[in-house]
Length: 144
Image (tube, rainbow, N blue to C red; front, side):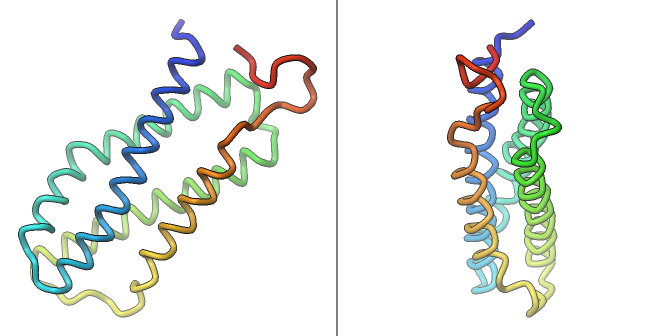
């Protein structure tokens, strides 16, 4: 069995790649709206090769960590999962926008706030993930 701290480190590294991919998508969408097709192609390739596997790894390692810590009954975990689902959905929305920009379709006007939404949601997830101990147990805050 893989030690808890190794899984946690892999999870944090993949979260960084995922959130970085979201921000690069947001910048690529903004550049694509200004007519820069080279950036949208580059970020689309990065997204397929790095960000999507990072998303899968985030979900798998996060589930493993939650199962190891027996945190599925914790309200903070469900709040965090709600934000992670929203970020995953945002990734899908931005991927679709990049695909439409590469085809030359105009972007929908209702989606202009997604850059701000990505920043706020990523900030909240990061803030909440700083030390989430199981308060019912005495001793170490995490089960190792």
